[in-house]
Amino acid sequence: MVLPNGQHVKFGPVEWEDASEDGFIAPKTTSVGGMCRSNPEERDESLWEWADCPEDVGVDFDDLWYAVNGGGGGTWGVVTSIYLQLHPFLPSRLYGIDMPNPVIPIDLGVSSCAPEVKDAIYLFFESFRLRWVLAPDTLNVSQAESDACGMADATGMHALVCYGDEAYETLVGKWESFANDYYDPTVYGGVSLDDTLACPGTREGTWSDTMKYPGGPYQGQVGDMPLPTFPSIAGSDNTVNVLYTKSYIDENFEDLISQIEFIYGGASMYLAFGSGTASASDQANSLSDAHRQAAFKLRLPADYFYGSLFAIIYNTTDADSFPSFQGANHVGNTYFGPLREDWTQACPADLTQKERGEKCVSIQETLWGTETLARLESIKEAIDPNYMFDCEGCVGNNRVRKDTGTNGDTEGEASSPAGSNETNDDTDGPGTSGSKNDDDPGSGSIAYSIKSAMLVMIAGALLTCILDR
Image (cartoon, rainbow, N blue to C red):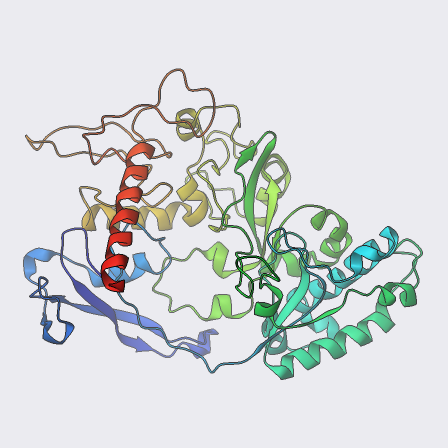
């Protein structure tokens, strides 16, 4: 990794201990060590020289490891290589009812079924899928079998992907027995089981085959799914990415089943969590407890969540400790927390970005919580005091910053969570940015970020051309 101060470092756990008695499948990291490269100008990797870091470098590798593992990218430095411990390869097999895809239209035949039959098969399969992922004991399925099949779901993709033939065969067998034992026509609009299962939409195959473009210039290539972002605020669509805790779902599973129609009426549920999410931690990382303990993620209207569910799912009794609750995937720059003075009220969508930053809980605090964010911010100050790396929504981006001028004592203003230090008085909505001195590379403005990104893309394209030649 290349740090903001220009040091080339490599680091990782050097001491650990077994944590299986505490329920962890990964060792507990107790010490992290690292080295600095003494000849960073050398391009030939075989000639690189690694040694203990000079005392004046001041790198705390325990802190750095904690920050880069869960603290978000784009703010700690440039990662140039990483070593991963891989698991044995298992083929992925997909089984489901329908996979509608706005990027790659796939007609599996469900569209030809009567509307009431489609509704019945969708909802019934979802009741099975939620049991498989969230309450496997109700199907007499082991936790290991449950963990082997999942889905990072979006846009109503009614399917599960299993890793390994054994897990797949178990899934298919349980689905068939579930249909015979649990289907109740009175719950599904009077549609009979035979009519429901006759709807020609069941799909078997591999995930990659399902996601390949069937034609056009990208035929045979896998497309993006889900799309990179969701709109943060579109009219009245002021939403949040809520991580539902496993403990809450265990206590309210039957209520969840009764709300399937609401959940799949437009919300995006991500069933990408399993028992390993919590147990695979090395206990020396900054991934939030909300992520570690999550059963699934669901995109909900902010008013509904803050007004009713927030205080039920999470502990909101300590006014000085805001809990992490939001999943980082697809969070836009307007996904603020509630009002600082009233956590039951969503951040008003009609405020400017600057006003939202002043009156509402920051994006960062919703992702990491008060305590973890405080430690991450202190690490940020130590490793990058001049904020060379300042990305929107990242740790430190909503800080009260001090920019060092030519005389070394220029005091800056508080930067807004949008990344710019100032917003024009005539801005007319969230997400707009005011003008900023382009000569100030530390401004963190949206305009500067775009310019920086363009320069990086141009440099990358030039390098690609050189390498190709």
